[in-house]
Structures are given as C-alpha cells and as structure tokens.
Length: 281
Image (cartoon, rainbow, N blue to C red; front, top):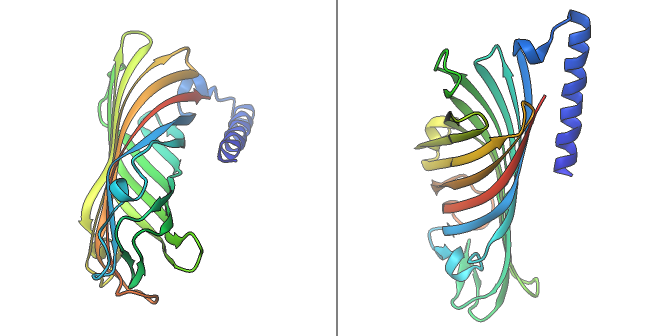
C-alpha cells in the first residue's frame, strides 16, 4: 500500500511537471531547475541493543535478551527527493518500524505498576514508524564529482508500545505522537563514470523540553546514519547497497494520565542492511 501511494505521488508530480513544460516551454531535464526522484529500499533489521522501562518502579527490560528481538526483521523505506534551483533539495521520507514478538518470560516484568509473572507468555509490540521532511543546501560549487550538503530535518514519531499476556488478562500500552527536529548532512563522491559512494546522517542530542517548550525534563536523541555504494544504469535509474545505523531514545518524566508515574527510559541501537532503487524524472 505504501509503495502504491509512492507511485501515485510520483505520477502526480510527473503530470504537474509535464504541464509546466507545456505551458512554459521548460525542459526540466536540461535546465535542472526541478528534479524529482523516488527511492525505495528493502532489506532486514537487526537489534544491537534495545532496552525500555515504564515508571520508576518498572523493569528495565532488555528486548534483545528477553523480548525475542534476537532475530532479523524485514524492513523497507520510501522517500521522495525534490531538487530545485540546482543546489536545494527537499526530502520526504516514510520509515515503517514494527517489531512484534511473543516470548515466555524468565522473570517478572513490571510495566507501569502491572506485573507480568515469570513463566507466562507475553506478546510484545514495538511500533515506531516515523515521517520526516528535510531540507538540504549544497555547499560545494562547481564540482561535478563531489557534493556536500547540510540542512535540517523535522521528524514526526508515531509510537505504540504494548505488552499483553497471552490470555489477554494483562495489558499495558504507551502511545504518543510528537515532533523531533534534527540536523542533516549528505555527501556524494562519484567513483568513475557510473559508480558512486554516499554518506548521509540525521541526528540530534538535546533536552526535549528545550525543543518543544515543555516543562518536562526529558533528554532525547536520534541518529540515522548510512553509507551506500551504487551504480547508475543511466540518467534516470540507479541501484545501491546500503548499511545503516538507527539509534536513539529518551529518558525522563512526562505528563501521564494513565497508570504509572510517567517515567520512561527507552534506548535503542539498530542496524539495517538493504538494497535500493532510485528513479529520477
């Protein structure tokens, strides 16, 4: 469904660009005033380390050791890059991130004052997709083989984290939507006529209260960094192999209307391996 939406969006952009060409006689491919690229990645995600805690009295739970996250999970990623006036780029990105497991607990698990007893089965859901819009400005002029750009990112997290006993009698869930600003850099080096190497990173470490004006003292961080190497088949189509580190989290106490005292500690360290394709109009 996500890929279908991306294709529909690409077709819409194509029709708008074609209309502009007819009305103004602009050859976008030759002038580079506007360039649109759709990118799709598919691969797998592995957990390096992932721990979480809800309430000060809660268990600091190790998802990888006790929560079934010691296996690989399928992953995909979709983005749309719109380049204009040669040195400016807008990036729209959607990253699904859903880790769903079922385990037999070795010890008691306490989540927001609710105890899931040892030797009982629990269903665990860590659903943390994010939406991102970024702006990049190229700083290196008159260099066709090397590019360096810097800018900013606004990420919207959309989290659902749940714990449910197999019989359905015990249940805890934590949900939230919120903005996360970050810095962004991207570099590209052409390795000959068709091959290239790219480095890209979005990241920040800062008090969340300072960023969003809240009175709650929460420290948060994100880092999404990747290195990819690829080949350009022609001016429109390229493919690449990508290694990515995805990490971050938060610790602190927020306003809370439900069970527990509002304290949250959540830190994750993931890696992904993927292949991708890029189509440029």
